[in-house]
Length: 342
Image (cartoon, rainbow, N blue to C red):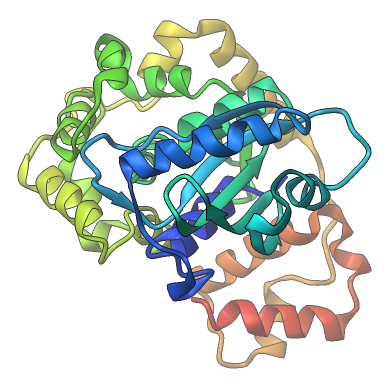
């Protein structure tokens, strides 16, 4: 299963304007999007046991692609084979990236070639997380900035606590696959019923600013890191509008403990989190031959500072406890490429 920071970065980056298929894919109105979903759904029941059209913002007038979340039937064939079997000659092009299956499809009902992303989930919990995360276009990326500032991660894989152990290593600890509960932890329990009533960007702004953990300073340029800038999708008019209004709200946290609602609403979850943090801190990891000293020796341009920590974190996320098994030449190439992204 592809990580949802990849899901959203990839789905949303290629879908905006139909970039994956270029000018071959027409933009569609909300009504046309619904018509296409009604057209393809009966063709897919043989192959998919569950499917839903992602919940777009009702005020969004047109769309670069159509996102459909699905769970496959227990059949022994690839999703590509299923889509080709379902659509026949109407399937003009196919592309796969992780669990995102993209097609250029000719819709008979609207007489247009359209870009459809079929996003595969493994089970009901996974389906729910992906579906909720894709809701309302820019919402999840923007709420993700708040989550990160508070030490959490809000993604299609679920809601995580980001724990920095005593060695400075970062760990994502799953708290729940239920993103509604994640929103409660972020301070939105009292307004959660209104989530299903969101229709406009202004509704998103009103919802996000309602949490006592919200702080408009989190969205100021110098406060955000590279990942935050990707989350808010800078340059996209609707996302820029939301961010601008969040900053202009000039609201600041009235509760300073980021775990306040986790402790209050989910005490058992918080206790398990504490146990996992203690367990992680108790693990003794042998000193690797690849460390800050090796990094500065191999890349003389690197000096003591935050870059070393970022590289060590990158190594840990990529290789885990297999780092020492990596050939030096491979690690040098991989690290060189990573440094170019900083």
